[in-house]
Length: 134
Image (cartoon, rainbow, N blue to C red; front, side, top):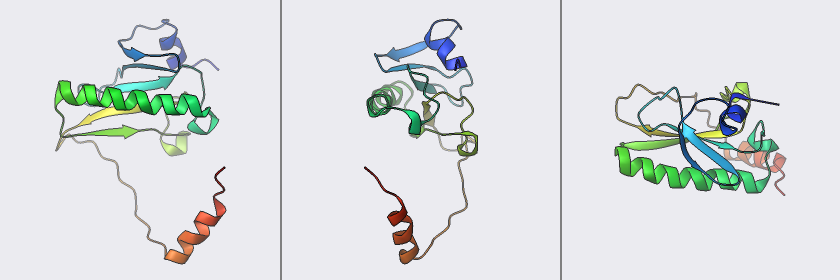
């Protein structure tokens, strides 16, 4: 599947590159939430994190860490949000695996909130039992 990010990575759409290696391609988000907002996308067109190989997923986070340090030095934000979303219900708007490196400032108007549920410890154990990590 060809996505807007695939077109960016292949130089088919004007963009501003920040960094790249053999696994990921980072570029400025055209819809800057705050100055220094960078997207880090996998070169392979995985749709979600669950589709990706471990090497690409790890490379994406390594790149995000490097870029976050550079954004911190350049813009001196009060904080940085690293956000990775999967599928529309998980807030993913482009079906190409990526994450946001988003500089944050007190009072910047960005909101990320969800209703907090606090199940009993036994229920948490039940949930954990259902997750089989290999």
